Image 1 (cartoon, rainbow, N blue to C red):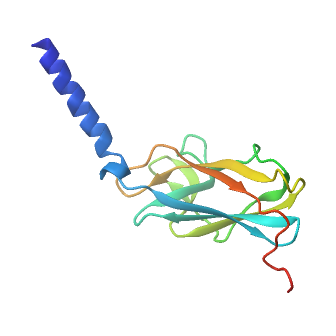
Image 2 (image 1 turned 180 degrees about the horizontal axis):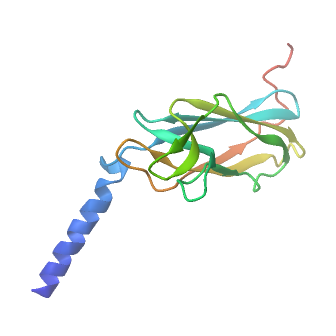
Length: 165
C-alpha cells in the first residue's frame, strides 16, 4: 500500500512540474530572444540581441535593488577572437519604478528591446561570440525562476554589410 501511495505522489509531482513547462503546454515563456551579428566593417561589428516579452510580461533590467527580483546580467567572457567596446546599449530606456511586492526600486521592459554591443575582430579565423544573458520576468500573477539565454555565434570573416557604400 505504501508503494502505491508513493507512486501516486510521484506521478502527481511530475505532472505538476511538467505543467509549468512551456513546451508541455504549461506556463508561457516570459520572453523570446534572438541573437545576430551585424558587421559594420571588415574587422568591426555589433552583437545584436532582441528581446520581446510575452504578452502581459515584463523583464527586469540591469538595475534592480538588493532583495528584489534577479537583475539582468550578461557574461560574454568566453568569446574568442573579438574585443568588446563598452556595454550593451538598449534601444528603449527601461521603466524605472518602486516595486511594492519586492519593496525595492527596479527597472524593466514591457515591450521589444534591441540590445547592441560593438566589437572589434582580433582574430578573424577564431572569432566566436559566446555568452549568456541571465534575466527574470513577471506578470500580474507570477514570476519566472531566473532564466538564461545562451548565445553562440561565429563571426563572419572579412565581411561587411556596408561594403561598397
